[in-house]
Amino acid sequence: MIGLCISGGGAKIGFGVGVMEILYEKEIRPELVYGISSGSLCTASLCFGGTDFWSSIDYLKNMLLDIKKKEDVLDPQIFRALVSQITGIGKSDGLYGMKTMRKKLDELPVKNPIMKGVVGYVDLMSGNINYVSSDSVNKKEFLDAVQASCTIPLAMQTQRTGDEVRVDGGIRDVLPLKHLIDDPSKVDEIHVVSLNPFTPLQEEIKKKILPVTLRSIDLLVNEVLQSDLKIAKLYNELIKEGRSGLIDDKRPIKFYEYVPTKFICNTIDFNKENIQKGIDHGHEIAKKVLKNYPLNTSTNQILIRK
Image 1 (cartoon, helix red, strand yellow):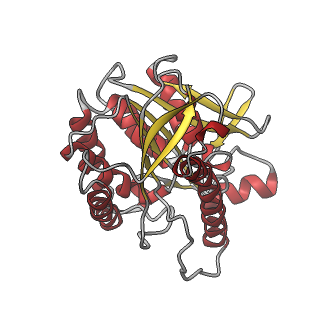
Image 2 (tube, helix red, strand yellow; image 1 turned 45 degrees about the vertical axis):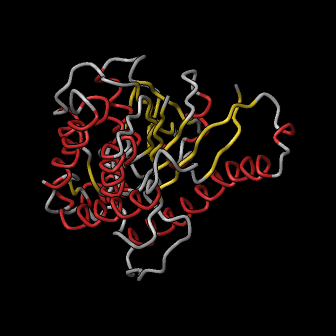
Image 3 (cartoon, helix red, strand yellow; image 1 turned 30 degrees about the horizontal axis):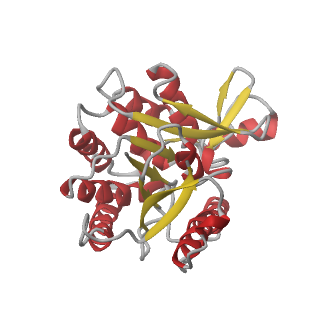
């Protein structure tokens, strides 16, 4: 069984679309997908965007390429947010509202999910990360979780549901690889799509609060990504050295990783050009990783619990 794991990355989501298009070309058909933040948007589309893998990818691609500027997906509310924070009047706690993005989510055409998808969000009240599966809740509840998973603190309006204050799952788990591995489905091949480079790329930072905040988040994301994949690489080294017995009760899994090697765009710079740039780079990287698929051994192979 094949699993797909997609990290957060904001407007770099085009990279994930490009990778998935090459997966389709190589006749790789994921049956289980985990996503965080922008990765949850991919997850929602794979579940509800079409009747098969290709039509779901195509739906997501067309939706993203229709975005001409970030205001086509995010609703500016800077003045309301400032008034709310200064006076305590109103509920605005982010520089952008999420109504337009939610409208796009609600337009996903398929009623029932065509595959199992899992997304994660953080509840600021408890500090916990909560995972929601498309096969355990209705479509609206799942899309609520997707919206929450995309909510970058400060930049975007939080989602308040019952006793929870929900924000971006990437705060706690930017790459839900461990949860995919532990899923009862027991995948034996995992394709990991990171929308951010593992090593931070140098970029100019404007003298404004939002760019500084988003850059700080990106740096944190880079650190978490590196930590998550160090575990997989450690397993791989133990296998190579013939010491797999040191890891009790594990199963072998083929492991493929797709990581950008150049700057695509800033986190909320949503526009057609940046989306297409990401798609093109996703094609480039995926073709290299899958050059000899399925004859090649994977870039890594790790031992996982049975």
